[in-house]
Image (cartoon, rainbow over all chains, first blue to last red; front, top):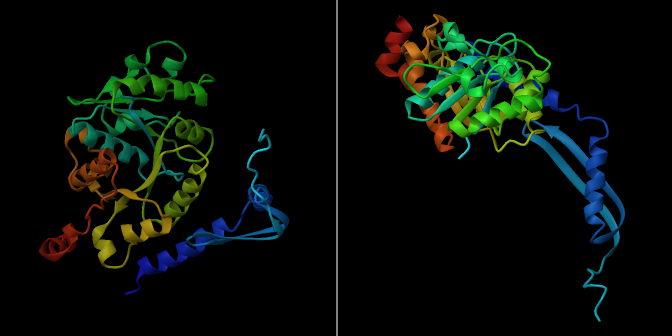
Amino acid sequence: MENYADKNFKRLEKILLSDKINIPEGFAEIVRRDIESVLSSYFELNRVRLEIIPSAAGAEITVSADASRIKTLSVGSNLD
Amino acid sequence: MAARKIVITSGKGGVGKTTVTAGLGYALAAAGFGVILVDADVGLNNLDVALGVEDRKLYDFSDILESRCRPGQALIRCGERDLFVLSSGAETPAMTAQAFRGVIESLATSCDFIFIDCPAGIENGFHRAVSAADEAVVVTNPAVSAIRDADKVLSLLTGYTLSSVGIAINRINGGKVLSGEMMSAADIARLLRRPTLGIIPEDAEILLGKTPAHNGRSEADEAFGAFADNIASRRARPYDYLSAHRGFRGFFRRRA
């Protein structure tokens, strides 16, 4: 007898994934800018890249960045 | 201490939100908690019918918002226990999300739990109901369309400030799960990736209109008790809905 449970489970995995693929336009850019803002406190950044790949388990997020220098953390401007 | 305010939602209509709200409220009241059930479905309200108190309504939510009564005066007591229902009433311009939340907050000082029975869909009624809650339970059943809509609702709920979001799986048939015809509760939980707070077996008594207040429930009683225990203790222990379908009991059930 055909196992409808397994068949429907596999159907739903595909359906739920396809529902998640439609990330709103501009969303990735908003996230990239926030990450760039945080990283720029510590690095002289050249470029920040962000990739979001929806998956059945949620999303796989990959961040990569190039920096020319690590910034010196300020120990305070008024040391009088 | 103020009541825990929990919205019962689903997205898709007909999955059993009202039944689950009524059964869960009844089980918690039976355990000694003070419970208020609020019907947020303006126009298609049925919570009073689910509890068998439809002929005792004097005032409803719209009366509170139009200042025709105080919030406590619109509550209908269900049986001997500390269980009350607040019916929704007709649509009114005064039914804003803020006003709705204000009434819920005023009721929260007088009980342990407030359950908000959310209307179907994801429009204004959904937003109004969810905005007034601190926690959410998304009800689904094993149908593919119900699970898909539950997943969409779970995504929408991430935009609200909710301390916990769990799922309840309604109308599951243990016999069909064991025979491979129906997805199991574990399969559904794996797809939706949220804690399973309640598993309610399919129960013909509910379709026959037997209400918890009239002790008409059979298979669902124990399940609602386990669900209530999970809510009260903030745990997600799975309910064994398959045991009744295994062994000799299961054999005779399948033959019936």
